[in-house]
Image (cartoon, rainbow, N blue to C red; front, side):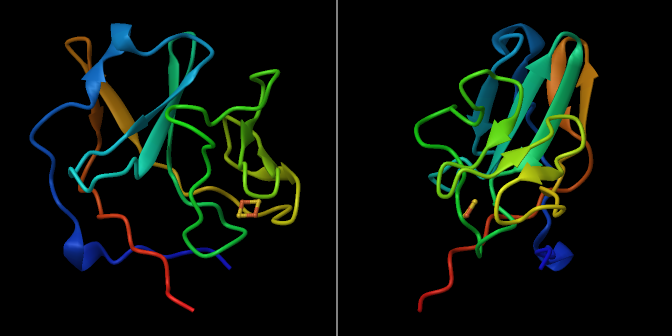
Length: 133
Ligand code: FES
């Protein structure tokens, strides 16, 4: 099931995520835009294209996807990978192509580049804590 965001908690950011030159072509990087103490989103750079997604796997409630800081890609760096159960996602669409959440999508975060700075477009919703079971 696709997670929905509570837009009533959305915050308009006043700072960019980083400078474009800080994003390495072909690599991913995590960000904590609201200072929540963990990376709640990440960006993948492919040339001049940037792809932003929430750090939530659609397979399992709010699961974080990276196995260590800034590592959101598989070994070939041609797919986004969730390290919990190995789901692989298309970088451009965020759609799961292999894995337990086949056909589901990551939640995209729209980005813009202004004066060389990378910004989140529009308000940003805080990450939700995992449900306790
Ligand atoms: S939590 Fe991501 S593949 Fe299972």
